[in-house]
Length: 360
Image 1 (cartoon, one colour):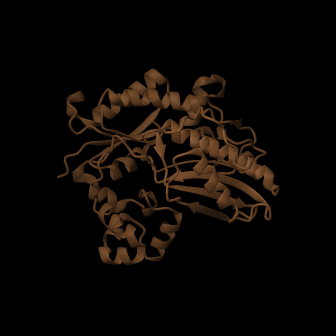
Image 2: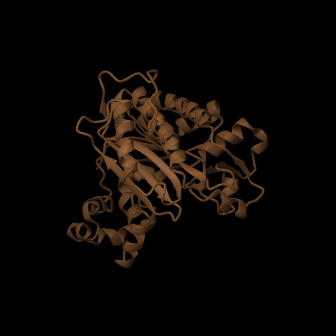
Image 3: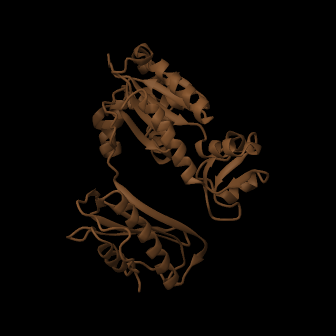
């Protein structure tokens, strides 16, 4: 039987819970963190009180206001969330160095070789939850199993304040009964396709051969074949390599003025380049994202032969990409700039160096 001990910790309504903790009068109220109710912003997080009204993450804030006009709408305070996340990570490190953060509010821990709590992953998870509550006044849910796939599913089983364990001998029965929508990696579109193929549970998925799944789902087919059998050998990577750096903004009103959009791209590029320098990285590819007023979204990318190792290279590439869009001819609601193909840079250009303007 598998002998790994994996814990997945997921903070409950993290952003909203931090706001309720820091402002006690918000406790017990429906709290929504995101955009203003009269804006195009979306819900970044919401308290459990707000979820009772059918509000969820990524919902337009205008819709959330319709469902719950009395909700408290707050702008995100990412500095506060990062500070809490750092303290949570410090608690994790008391138990294991093998930590793989997925975001500010969730992470995998490999405690296979830990002698703490009598070597029990369940007791370690319970201790971590208790420390997070006592030291940060926040609530976490935990999932415990022998691989990352099952640990992540387990952490969502008894939210909020849950602790769910899937033991190796119980795993296949658990997977067989699991609705396919609960499988990590199965989104709404894939779920609908699986339903058309008669796949509604893990048992249905397991009944199909790997060749059939490969034919129907391409490169994801072998993954679905393995997880239907409880097989996931992915290690907990304590130093995850970042794949991209980006920034984007949605406008309160559609923009048609090209000069105004060029100014915004310049600001986004400055933020992205500063982050690149902070991390002492270079990039291979720059991408410009444009979402038009009718929600049609395009991306335009460029990979200069010399890569993106200077602010000048980034600005030059973006100027060329703008030409291949309909900016200035069609109203735009969102712009984004991102860098990918990241690699360490031995001598990064200083962020404090001369600021170049993209469209000057």
